[in-house]
Length: 332
Ligand code: ATP
Ligand code: MG
Ligand code: FE
Image (tube, rainbow, N blue to C red; front, side, top):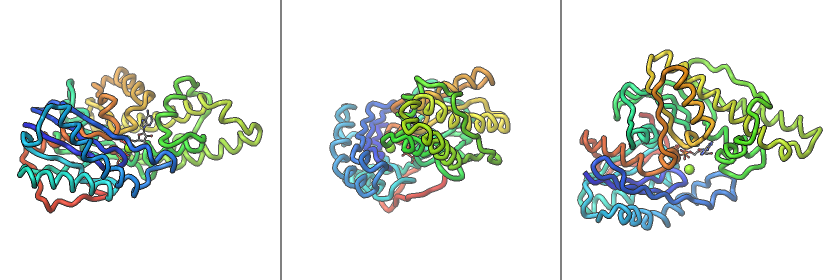
């Protein structure tokens, strides 16, 4: 089976070719235009996707050595995401499916983040728990089969990626600040500054209080030392990262305990965070979990995760018509 998958939900234009369950190419064009605005500007994202989509798809096919006539199906991200961005990928995929007379597969972006854990061996067995942490979502997902999954906990306000990015902004770091906090944290002391851990019921999360406490903390410190941030960047970043990671890991531990599931993975952009990756491994050793972390390039937005999801949908004959419409929000 040869599948071409397209991802365009936010600010990465990506295309991937999968052949018989193996990823042969995964080309990702990042949009740098948003840096100067401190966040993704939806209108600019749509325009950049429009410019990138043809060369990105061409490149992914070339790299895989596959001609488009050989494809068995075309897959695209249907939801959730920025609607103008999703429209570019979905319209392109539909046109291609129509022109080539091939079946079309619609993929849920958050389901695909979870299934990034199934791209390379060893893959999890079922049931499997996945902590999906990205720019717009923070979810604990119970996965009973590749296409059967349920959100059993999620954030009540900001996503974990947002918590990283908003904290970084308070420190004067450019967008997206998550990777920069990770970088500075490597040289810092995670116990140096204490930020509170919120008490949120069940398996849910909250990160808006953390942002506020960091703001007050910085205001207080800057009264005495206006250059406090410059002087303590590594320790502040390490302390913030430590708190975000402990909030995530404590809920994951609770979820494992309540469900009895010990096959545990992470997914989404924040799963690229070195503190979270290390924490998952050490919790795994301590609690006897079998842990899974996708390869770095499959953590942030990419079309390979759309392709692997489409591969399962192809086997289940889950196709959609040309009338399939993208959605900004969607449950699964
Ligand atoms: P969603 O998947 O919820 O629609 P998204 O697709 O924009 O959102 P991703 O691309 O999966 O999100 O992830 C982007 C987020 O990951 C950003 O918030 C970014 O700061 C964060 N991130 C990426 N690398 C790291 C890292 N090393 N440490 C912390 N955060 C990181
Ligand atoms: Mg992105
Ligand atoms: Fe994403």
